[in-house]
Length: 479
Ligand code: ADP
Ligand code: MG
Image (cartoon, rainbow, N blue to C red):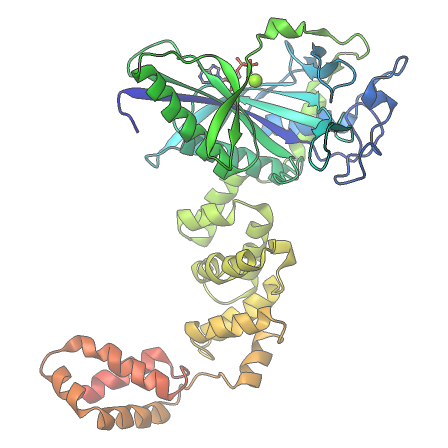
């Protein structure tokens, strides 16, 4: 990265709200229905129809605002944003403009140097989604699917305070975690329920005013956000260094070629002729309503992470991983409550073996074939020395494959650990007798050969000898 330029990024994140029906009509929001089966006359803006606000979206936006420490407006107003596009039959999108429902929020992320950094959230406003144009599979024409028209969105706008692609991703991940904790969005990025536009500019170090920005549209994966921004930073710096100027425009990221391309020159707000929608009343809520919503807030990721460190004494990084998803955090707590193993041991297993297996099989924690209670049962067997930590991994895989509880697997496969001192001593004696050369070297000072002897004993016992006892007995016998 070029050191003489400073990078400035602001994100506009669109989170689809998890309502059953649309923001201004009773049509279903379910994903994946046949084209144009879920767009009613209101969504299409037929003459004479009137939009009716879905109360659920107000509650959801309020929850979000409270979660990011923002001001909730007791009065907010829907406005028409006018533009022509085939997937917008009304000729305008209903959004909020001058008086959004949420303003002046904030979020703490970890910056590139590992320190906490506060990112301002300018505003979050409610709006309806548009439909979508379809080109795939159609030869000489385009199709329009209006199922998505009228789907409720919360657009979350950050201050231009992010300084790298990594920070932008950290911020986006945090928002993603929060909306899922709150249950206000499923955050499904493949289905477009959570996507972002990244505004990117660069300026020479020390310059006060912001550089000219470009806007990268509709990035729908964390990886693409990072790659698109990095490409764009390099493009802008090269352009400026070659004596050119950045043009304010909207650009599209092409993930196949890993580059951004111009899409259209950037509209100014006054091109949209915003005005308050005469069909909708201002949204008025009072302090009592806001307090009632506050009562329903769950424990949020930062608070949960802090509690995990305090209460369970686990590593901060592990607490961060476990609390990134509410259901993973719940799972961890259920295991920790049910096992005699210490919480850090539980954290290690959940983050290592369990998350690895979920990942490998493309499953969410809710679909884990090994329940929290079953995992607790396994960890108890390590704790009481029935099996070693190493064998536990084998037992876990068998449980994962449906072979039963930890005890059933241990019995069926004969994996009980050998803790009988006399039995281990006899294997150690055989190993020493069979390797006189190594014994001599060890005695001459080559201490690290202890690993070799431990390995031989483990091999002879099928990995079932208690490792602590093996070490001790070996050291005693080798002198
Ligand atoms: P618009 O409504 O045209 O998209 P806004 O002024 O509301 O523009 O800003 C949208 C986003 O762009 C915000 O997240 C803001 O922080 C960011 N932004 C504005 N100016 C810049 C800039 N010069 N460089 C980077 N980001 C910017
Ligand atoms: Mg914008």
